[in-house]
Amino acid sequence: MTSTISFNVAVIGGGPAGLMAAEVLSDRGIAVDLYDAMPSVGRKFLLAGRGGLNLTHAEPPERFLGRYGSRSTQIAPLIQAFGAEQVRAWAHGLGCDTFVGTSNRIFPVSMKAAPLLRAWLHRLRSRGTRFHVRHRWTGWSETGALLFETPGGSVTARHDACILALGGASWPRLGSDGRWIEALRRRAVAIAPLAPANCGFDARPPWQPLLIERFAGHPLKSVALRVESDQGQIFDRRGEFVLTRTGIEGSLVYAASALIRDTIARIGQATVRLDLLPDLPAGPLASRLARPRAGKSLSNHLRVQAGLTGVKAALLRECVPAESFDDPTMLAGLIKALPIRLGAPRPIDEAISSAGGVCFETLDERLMIRQLPGSFCAGEMLDWEAPTGGYLLTACLASGQHAALGVMDWLRAQSLSAPAA
Image (cartoon, rainbow, N blue to C red; front, top):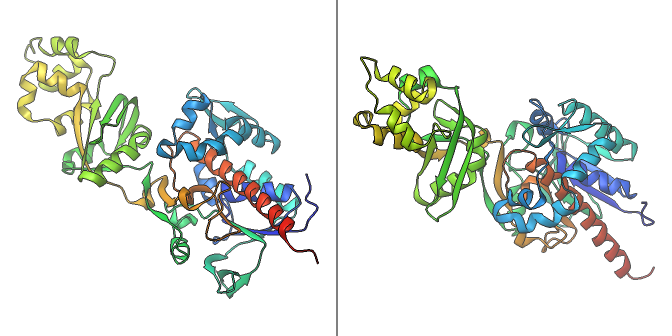
């Protein structure tokens, strides 16, 4: 579809949300100038795909939307318009076939981000999108022009509308550094503090040196993690994660990270419970542990009767008092619900993504900033979060499309209300 009125729109930020916004606008005949602070666009997108680009997730829509937690209501219209099926169709249109993995995660057949990004940028350029790299946005001038810092000095640009898609703060070396906050706060835009999401946590007290030396970096597989917050929220899921030098991280921890982080923020710490043997009930486990050792060491007894070895056995020793090993029933209970006390999330620049950002309450239904007509927001700089599994990328793409369509709607209204020449 082609616009019959000539407009020019600035898209600031060359991540998935910004690139999708540029695609939607250019496809409709809008002239697009895309600005990015880095020497090239899509850097975080490329890094995220290094281990296999997880595009989206093949689960029922209701469960999919539930992954966005307290912001599910705001994210719902975006995902309903551009969800998992639309993401797959979009990738196919770029020549990248996809498949559904055993975990219901959806990947390109190539598993790589680079071919998709190359095809995407080629399509954008062929539609006239102009790229301006090494342009760091710093706000607006007194007359409303966009301000940029470049290697050649400060420059200004004027456009009919702009979409801000500047990311969060979890990858500063790739451009997601949160430096946009100050420019928006100067315009009284409400912003929730940025915080780490999909992140690891530090143990309190810190791990003993022997545990770090022998088992840091080792995965805990086939375990179940339970988190009960001080406000009654419960997370209980099976999976795996990794023991780190300072605490724990990995997919199962990431899935619970919002609940853990928010609990720590309220009360100063969080205690998670780890079931080291989720396939063995506590009763039979206690009976096995009560069998005579017959001269075996405690380590051998745990190995023979419970199958506990390596990092699982070491973590058990780390987290429970020595006297608990003399009571089979108590020990079984601890194996089934091993308490791990966590004192702080890892720094935001180590996180996979960030929470917080521009509050939805300061935006209209088109994602336009209410007090800044013609300025829209999209992507991770909005106040939402989601676990890994394709949910992050899907919502970024969906919000980019939504903001672009919002720009079209606003420009159309502006042109209709403009006085005749």
